[in-house]
Each structure stands twice: as structure tokens, then as C-alpha cells.
Amino acid sequence: MHRLKPLTPLGAVTPRVDTIGTLTITEIVHQALASTAAREGQMEALQQKLPLPLPDVGKTTTQGAFSAFWTGPAQWMIVANHDQHEALASEIKQMVGQTASVVEQTDGWCRFDVSGAALYDLFERLSSAPVRRMTKGDVIRGTVEHLGAFLWRLDQDHMAVIAPRSSAASLHHALIAAARSIA
Image 1: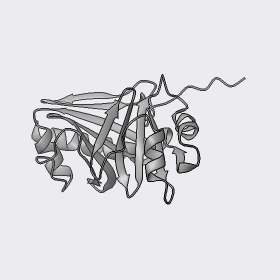
Image 2 (image 1 turned 60 degrees about the vertical axis):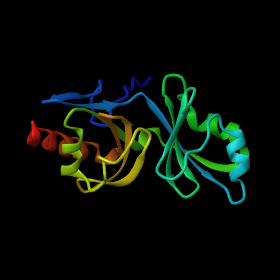
Image 3 (image 1 turned 90 degrees about the vertical axis):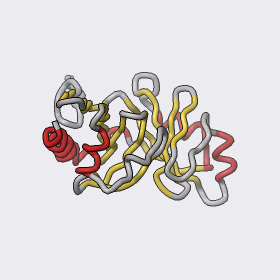
Image 4 (image 1 turned 180 degrees about the horizontal axis):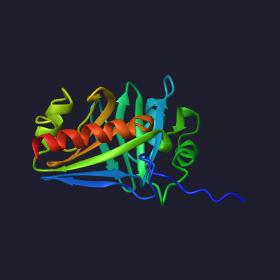
């Protein structure tokens, strides 16, 4: 019998937390992700079947256990706590039927939450995204350092960075290096 242990995107048993100056960079591993794309002519039907309203371009919504953020035209990433929704994609598929294409994304992405007073300074070194103008609930698809990522404004001094899991070490390195440059 196999005795497999889940590893974080950075390859550890427990998530990494780094505090540098006023910034804290936290590896987030307790989120389940499912991409959802409306099928042609099915937007209204899809919206009626989901447990939360679908956000507009560059926005997020949250209702109950679920959050969603816009990822492209008629496309969203739905997020929920992994412990309660380990099979999130299957749950969403059951809800929406043939109105959307739903794909499991949990292990395909990494997420780092960055919080602290120097948040703006950090992201201005890493991205051309207008982080000072972003408000709570805004999401921008862009680059961080040289990596494609989503920047999700969670609060005034709290940002989530979501990028492909294969770039977790590079993204973490960029976040740490930028944090050290302003500490």
C-alpha cells in the first residue's frame, strides 16, 4: 500500500510563512479551485444554477462557502475551502449540468497571500498592475515578475497572488526578493 503525503506547491509538508519587515508572505494550500466556462447561449441558465452570482470583468463575488473571480470572457475560477469541498469541480458539475464546462484546478495553481503595510511598494516592484487603485474584490490578470498570475485584492493591506503551480518556487523567490529590497 502506498503512503502518499500531500506536498505544498513549494514541496513541503506544511505551508511556508515568511515575515520580512512589515510584510507577511503565506503559502495558501487550503483552497479548492474549479474553472467554469459558460457554454454558448447558457449564461443565464448557468447563473441560475450556481450558489453565488458570477462576477463582472475584474471582480470577485463571495456567497456562503464559495468565492468566484473573473478569468476571461464567460469564464471564472470558483474557490472554496478544500476541507469542505475537496471535490469542488464535481460539485459544480452536478450543479450546472450542461450549461458550463467545469475543470478541476486545485493542484494546477499555487497561491501566496501577501499582507502588510508595504504591500503597494512590493507589488510596484514586481508588476505593472495598478495595485494602488485596486479595491477589495478586484482581480487583475497580469504578470508578477515575469510570471503570468492573478492578483486578487482581499483587503486594504492583503493581496492574493495565484499562478501556475509549476512556477511556485520562482514566484516565491520574486516575492521574497522584493520584500527584502524594501525591508
